[in-house]
Amino acid sequence: MSSNEQGIEGIIKFIALKNAAEYNGKARVETVIAKAFAARQDLRGSVKSLLPKIKAIVHDINLLSSVEQQALLEEIAPDEEKKVEVQSHQRSTSIQKLPPLPSAVLGQVVTRFPPEPNGYPHIGHAKAAIIDEEYARMYNGKLILRFDDTNPLNEKEEYYDAILEGLEWLRVRPNIVKNTSDDILKLHELGKKLVQLDGAYVCTCSQTTIHDLRSKGLPCQCRADSNTSLELLQKMFDGSFDKNAAIIRFKGEMADQNTAMRDPTLFRIIDADHPKIGTRIRVWPTYDFASPIEDSLDGVSHAMRTKEYELRNELYFEILDRLGLQKPFMMEFSRLELDGIPVSKRKIKPLVENGMVKSWDDPRLPTLMGFKRRGFLPESIREFVLTLGLTLAETKPPFEALEALNRKRLDPQSMRLFFVKNPVELCVQNGIPKEVILKNHPNSELGIRRLRVSSSFFIPQEDAEKFSIGDEFRLIELYNLKLVEKQSKNNKLVLVATVTGDEVRQNMPKIQWVAKNDIVPYQVIIPKHLYVGEEYNTKSLEIAEGFAESFVSTLQPDTRIQFVRFGFCRIDGNHKAIFTHK
Ligand code: ATP
Ligand code: MG
Image 1 (cartoon, rainbow, N blue to C red):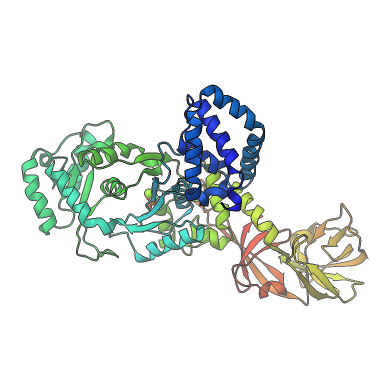
Image 2 (cartoon, rainbow, N blue to C red):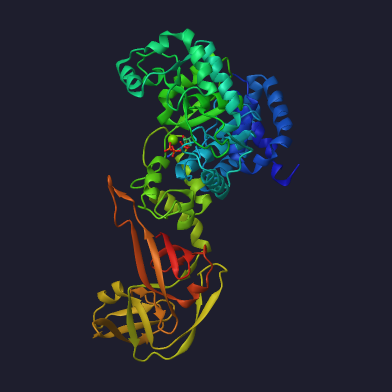
């Protein structure tokens, strides 16, 4: 037994007894496991070794009468309850947990994350993938990453790679990675079978006719001619039809209240080069067909998707029913949306293609690469999506909540350095040249830096403009000054001040500075909301120009720092950082 499994027996007994008390004296192994792991996350890796123990405890407890169970619970409760509470409390200050899955059996949960490789992954995908992964881990099951690549017009190798890279950055590690296109022949076979079973038919009507009849709730001639559809089916697969000349449609109910059941398209003919398959396949399934079939063939136990698909659930199950295939348990959660930032590939892609943002990793975008570039940590994103949990409510979580989680992590590990935006020169009359030692962080071991100062500095314009003659202020970690004069040199403001002391005083403004002999020109890119209301924000990328202390230019790209009184930033390149958040 590993050290973290110590003391677990009491907790398991306690949880099992409570569970038994709630359910007529019969505790369930799965529930006890889920609760035990919820209370003690550190045990998740030990499922295998703990399982027999948990089973034995539950077995023994279920043999007791309810009076005996009650007595035992009272005996152990005071101690064990505390442990469970302490652990749950510790957890709630770290990462939130998801509620148990319905009808889940330990070791048999299979979830899947099915992105289409038609763009770069975004924070909405993070939500879906992390929830899928958390559940797979919670039940010692499997996570499948399935590229839903059945539209060769949209898929690109670059996007498969970007999704893999994004998930790797998030540390979402699927147990199986596959493509829907791997199964294209099986999908064909099942599609043909559905037609043969009269559960679908080939339709050669024009797009406008289909659209028109669908909105009127009326069937077309093709639907009535089921006999010919077998012939047409043959033609569809042997290449006799041009692209878009025929489709396979589900035989639903044209007048169905649920419009998703009005004979939706299951297969269409597309002539395009598929990144994995090439041009040898022309008949491609739609999402509506591929998704239930793949879930079923992959043995998915719990299929989770966003609420937008709710109306399609009926179709999903009906397809599986008609083909006699095993059905997963379907669950929905709300789409993650953010104010002023579009969280959907179909909205992000045009921004990239039209040059409204620079690239998929533009820091204004909610893509994982955008967040990474901006300085967000993958752990913060995981915590953020887990705190949102499985709600169905379409609320937009405040971006500030994500920032707060990230700040908590960045704060202890980011050096505090000086950047002066819109610098204004400051001459210190009695400033003597000296070496100063600055701590890189007040309370952790992030080292020190030494620099020489003399009598010339720069301070931010915003501060300089506020000060009046006679005002006192402090240059952080250096000394206090009194403003003597405000001059204008070549139309530029210059402040003249005199040193008044060293001691830190409560109400004195404390400002960042750079020494004139130790500066590098520096740019901080500040991403703002891409949209204000429905309008594209033409000022969504602000650039702050100024001077940083020269030490900053020695830092490697990707270093995360805090510019004092400015905000957290990530070094993005030579003389350039990206603003993460305050
Ligand atoms: P598109 O706009 O092209 O449909 P998408 O952004 O919706 O793209 P998909 O590839 O369709 O991405 O989605 C893959 C999976 O991620 C689906 O299970 C989907 O439900 C989930 N997903 C996509 N966007 C979000 C989101 N904003 N919030 C939560 N889950 C999402
Ligand atoms: Mg989608």
